[in-house]
Structures are given as structure tokens and as C-alpha cells.
Length: 390
Ligand code: FEO
Image (cartoon, rainbow, N blue to C red; front, side, top):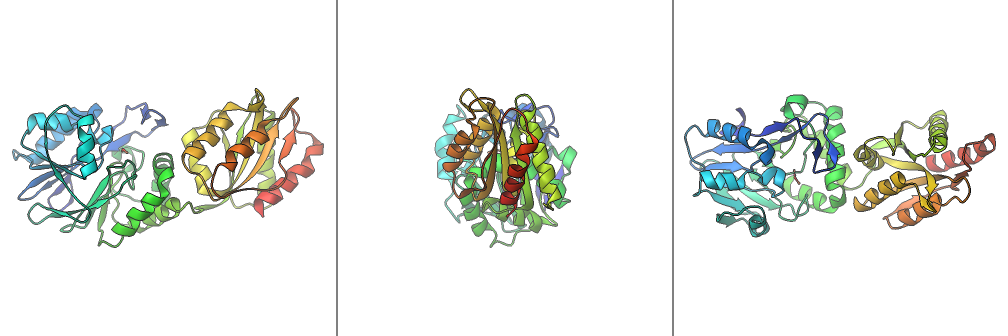
């Protein structure tokens, strides 16, 4: 058991054999379901874990309790990766009181079939454990409506629910935050794909909690943020305000037979030759979609190259733009390349889809390729590169 602060121990578990997190995100380094225990005059469990790793968590809990019985289960977030063991906990400790927001207590019967005694916390209210005192703050839509975070005044630990979470098991990525680049890579993919739509709620939460004297941030996934946490907070400010994190251009393409891929790769070379500080390229047919989404948010400029298909837009590009619509992608410059062998239709659909998003500036003349790139397309591609770099 690892003590993260005075009388506060980590009892969470790693999951290294999950195929897809939330049914859609690959997690090559696994994921952790974090859970904590505060052992004061009163004993509080801070969230349970996914039932997939329930037995391991129960063993951690039992060892950390050392024969004591828990008084409270604090439920910061009800999603099954954190509520999976609530029913079992009620079976073992029927007297335990469940502490959470009113919305969480109202929704809880959707997840369990056991009666429970709930204590509803309102904004700013505290739960006294002895030396430790937990103050609660609403965090609706970070990432579900019932979410609350809590702050322990005694230790300065912020129990942040999904906020500041990261893909990656702790045995792989470390128990404490170490390095900005290393953390940001999978924290960014996690953030934009899971909370990307909820920038405003995340901003509201940051405004409230950053006024607190935070020593450590204890999220529900990934490492604990202590030394250097300011770097992570600064990234969260950029991400949640839809700001540009990295100067450069993201080139995303969806190609059927390679012709569109060739033009996209060529445009990437033109951009580099023109001095673009960073050019990231993604094959929307083969690369991880969640990573493409992450890069679309990371950079301020995107070139989207796609084939026409069935009188519309080739499906991988359509799915990508649809995901960006769902995630409230916004405040970006976009340039378009379409490929069409007889009736090009991709650019029209891309423009329609981009037209539904906030503050998307489509720049330059869309370039149309007929099956394969020709020398005669060069001038139009040069002009498109200039437009996106302007
Ligand atoms: Fe980690 Fe929104 O659940």
C-alpha cells in the first residue's frame, strides 16, 4: 500500500488486459482504476473500481483497513469503472454510508440493487473525518452530470474524479507524475476523447479548485500529480479553453487506393519545406482515431484530405469529422483536399460538416485531385499550403 499523504493510502488497481476502455479506446499500456482510503477517526473509501479488478481491490482494501470497518464510501463519479464494487461493498459493510452529490445518490440505484444510506453533499459542504476534512465541489459534466470532487484540507489532496486522468497503468507509467511530455501524451488522448466536449465545465471546475492550496491531485486514472503539477494544470487550461497547444499543422487523410495518401504526404513535405515548425500526419483508415482526434485539438491548423465515396465522403473521414462534431472541436483553421475520379463530392460534405462547428475557418481554395496527383496540381497545393500557414 502506498501512502500518498498522511493517513491516506492508495488502494487502486491496474488493468493490463482490457481490450478497449469505454468500449472504444485502445490502451496499450493499460489503465489504472484509482481508489484511496483515508484512515482517520472515521474511515473513508474514496471511490471503488471497475468490477473487472474487484477481487484485487478488495484485497488491497482489506489490507489497508487492517481490521477496521469503513464508515463512508465517497462516490465522486458513478461511471462503472469507479462504481463497479459499490454493491459488493454494501454486502460486506451494510452500515457504510454513501457520500456524494444529490445527483449521484439519485442515480445510484441504476447501478446497484441494494438499499443504502446516503449523505448528500452540497457545494462547499464538508465531511469531517477527524483531522481530515473533505470539502466538496460540484464538477457536473466533468465527465458525467453527477460528478463532484473533494479537497482534504488536512493534506491538500484534491480528489479530482476523471479530471487530470490519463491512460496507462501505474505499473507502466509510474505512480507519481514525472515528466511533462510523457504525461501529456496519454493524458491528452484521454482528455479530448473523454472530456473534449466539456471544456466549459472543466474551466468552471478549474476556477473553483485552483483557488485551493492544492498539494497533490489524486485523479481516478493515472499518476498522482505532485511536484510539477503546475505543468499539467497549464495544459488543462489550454485544452479546456480550446487553445492551441503546439504550433504546427495536422494533416489527416482518408485514402482508398493510395492516391489521396500520396497527395497528403506531399502536402506535408511542402509544409515542412516552407518552415512549418511541426507537421503531424495521420492515416484515418489505419491509425488510432482517438489519436487523430487528440492531434486535431493539439494543433491550431488542419489539412483534411479525403476521397469521394458513394456520392459523399469516404467513411473514415466522415467518421473522423463526426467525432470532432461530437467533441465540440472548434476555433481552428482548416484546408481541404478532395479526390474524385468522376464526380468529386468529398469537399462539399466536409464543408457542410465543418459548417456545423464553432469558429472553424476554411482557408484557401479546396484542391481537387482526379484519381492521382499530377504535376499540374502543384501550384494549387503550394497555394493551399500558404493559406493554411498564413
Ligand atoms: Fe473514469 Fe468517466 O469514468
